[in-house]
Length: 130
Image (cartoon, rainbow, N blue to C red):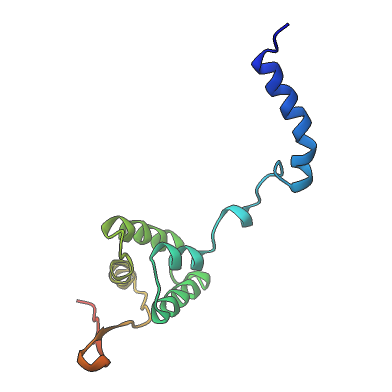
């Protein structure tokens, strides 16, 4: 009698379940394993590669942790900046968050964009709110 595919699949699953249980495959994911930290989300999602960008984002996380800045606002601007410029979202995020935070009476830490000048020197280009 030919073996039905469903019967064969059932046998394979029954045989492999104990092995999967040993390595933890069937254990439910905990919130800590499936959600990123806010800092990790911002650094990775905004492609913050420079130390100044990472430091500024760390200061934003502190403002969120202290309750001075709402996480919903931070996430909304995060999504907007990534849609606005998928290749380089950080400048849009910094500017957008600064404008909306200022409307809510929250002062964000300053951030200076550094431009490369001739001779390898860097030139400071502070961004001031309008």
